[in-house]
Every structure is written in C-alpha cells, then in structure tokens.
Length: 226
Image 1 (cartoon, rainbow, N blue to C red):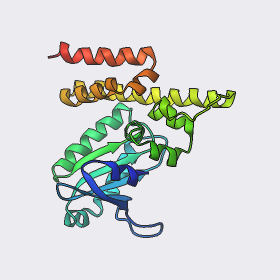
Image 2 (cartoon, rainbow, N blue to C red):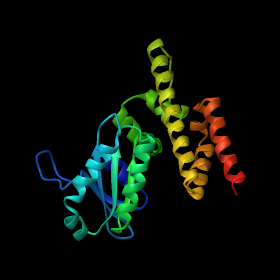
Image 3 (cartoon, one colour):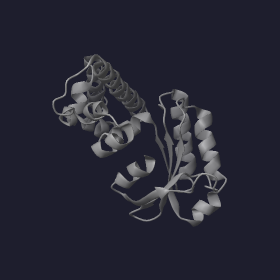
C-alpha cells in the first residue's frame, strides 16, 4: 500500500518495493524517484503503538547505510507507521529527526495512521483493493460510493458506526497535530490543511459537532494570532 500511495504522489514517479523477504534492504522498504531530482526512501513499521523508540529504530536502520543512500542521491526519507503519532514525545522526536536529517540535506517525513487515511481516501480504487469493504469506501470516500440497492443490516450498521468513529478519530488526531504545529509557528501549514478539511464536504459531514467546532476554533485562532 505504501508503494501505491507513493505512486499517486504528484511529485514522485517509479515507486517500487525495495528488496524481497530475506534480501538485504539497507534500512528501506520502498523507493521512488523525485521528479525534481533525487530519490525518496521509505521505511515501513507495522505496529499499532507508535513510540519514540520505534522512530529511532527506523532512523538507525537507515543511517547504517547512509553512504549508500548518499551515493543514490536520496533527498527524502519517510517513516510510514500504522499507528497514530499523537504523543507529544513522538512529535518532539519527529521534529528532532527532521532537524537532524536537514543537516544532511534530507527531508524527513512521518506518515502515521492519520496521514495514511488522508492520502488513501483520495483514491477509492486503493480503498477498495486494500480494505475490501463497500462500507470503507462509503465512509472514507463519500456516500456516492455506497453500493446500489444498499440495505443496511445490523452488522453493516455496526461496521459503519465503527468506521465513522475511526474517521472522526483520525480527524481529531489531525486537528491536535495542527494545534501543536500552530504553537510552533507553522501558520501556513495549519491554514492550508484546515482549509482542505473544511472544503472536503464528505469528510466534514461525517465529523461530530465537537470536532467541527474544534476545527473552527483553531481556524479562528489563526486570525486572532495574526
């Protein structure tokens, strides 16, 4: 799925897996070519709990082969995580690693569960292929993807409720991350992502009034701090 998401990024091409099971992967699971030049390398860690130690481990595995990746003109390093990077300590580690890699002229990125949800929901075919559920399609991509002649059963209603809760939780994590980014002075990033959230009608309609209010308050805070 990481390779598919990389392939859909507008500034990348030629995304592919890096090595097979049992082969030396040099701290990387996937690569892609950057259109402006250079290479992106991605390390995938499929653990539910995101910790500082997990991020450090991914970075250490990559750093063990830094001369190799320097020789391949690696300019971006992405750590892809299954869980949520909502812990303040984890976010602090993300900032530390970003600064450390910047000194090596490498852009460091962290794709956690929230980021993955936001990226994959733009591509209904990927949701269908990897999640294999019409309910996922409807919740993540909008009601227009609900199957025709859909008759909800108790089981399907329970699944839909669970998935709506997942989507709302993802949005809540994102708003919390944006609030922290605003405190660090990243006003432009916060403004752009909040605007995208408000303009995404299908997602906005699924959010609870409390989460909507939280986003509106954060958006208002941008103007108050101006």
